[in-house]
Image 1 (tube, rainbow, N blue to C red):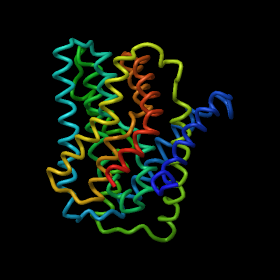
Image 2 (cartoon, helix red, strand yellow):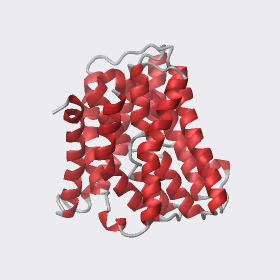
Image 3 (cartoon, rainbow, N blue to C red):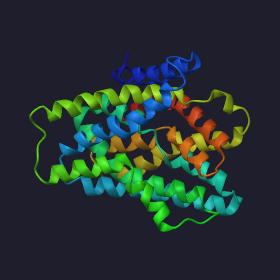
Image 4 (cartoon, one colour):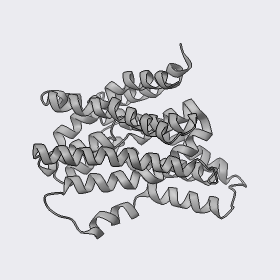
Length: 301
């Protein structure tokens, strides 16, 4: 088995395990929402904080990496706005398509980066997330509420309260202030971080809804194709244009090749979007990514 498949198949095995556990109703329906909240508010922020606290923020490649992230997301967003104008999608449908194309499964991304590229890759990924999470959240909320209007305060406040953003900011501040995590603190955060990714992948599997895949085949087909193939190719083109080094290029392409985030379903329901379409996009993209991710990364390598 190639090193690439060796690194990736356990991640998808955990996702399938989560799906099977949910179908077997083990350890119980109440477990999954509680596990997601624990991960989202404590374990996952610990991973991001510790990764950024020790990241090389003086790396001269970071401004180009940040520009590549913004160019990739901006290009995808402009294309969506143009197609929406031509097709006349209502906000609920436009919001689902936007999240299907621009959001990404952070748990799978960091688990894959950690398996393939180790701590240097995780540090780069954490820096990318500090840019990508608020940008994509703004785009998603605006898309879902485009017909109703939303104040700037209503758009910005959820992002400022986002535990992932706060963890990234705290980690960067600790790093820039010159503090180093010692006296067992680094070990504590390491244990929390190690717990986050397996639990997150199980929750990803538990959130899948295979029954929603019936119907909407054309919409599912083009959105999944663009997310899993078009966006990573766009990211690769941007990386080549900006002459990014190999590791930065690989991490950038990987994040743009990830399936959309399971949390997109919750946001879509909260804001009155097409939650059935969103559930189908999450499920199909996650299943197809088991094939597309190894192929793309093998081509890149």
